[in-house]
Image (cartoon, rainbow, N blue to C red; front, side, top):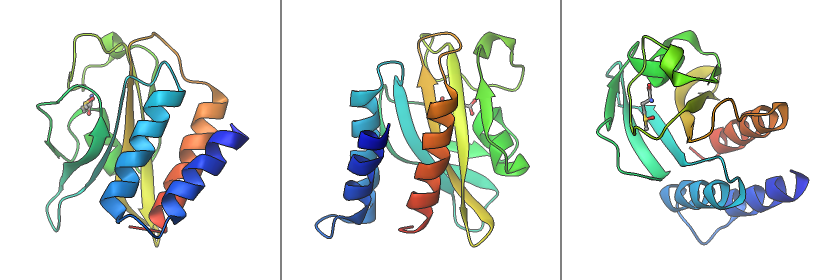
Length: 149
Ligand code: SME
């Protein structure tokens, strides 16, 4: 995990790429390195609107390019300001399906100056796959991302 964090840091610190390119590279690296991360992407608050707009991602195209606050796992995190780990998406009522293959999901908020400005969303094709180390790494990553957005 230390090695992965170093590689993530070097992407985020690179002077050669703009923010969007950096976030795209972050998605690619996570997708490549963690076999049970099967859709990895960022959502951000859409201007003044109480909705999320899809940012850089890696994985199957999703219909959910705009998500109103409160809807789905992502929309709930936009309101609760708390990480949401879903070990089994079938057990969730307020869930927006992106792919029939998705079995689990984790959404971690990104705070800038204490304000919830977006999130990283990971879908998995494996049931209950996310570890404490994943959670810790993703919270660290969101903190690092907040410095460049
Ligand atoms: N499952 C999410 C929607 C986004 S897709 O997974 C990419 C949700 O319930 O908010």
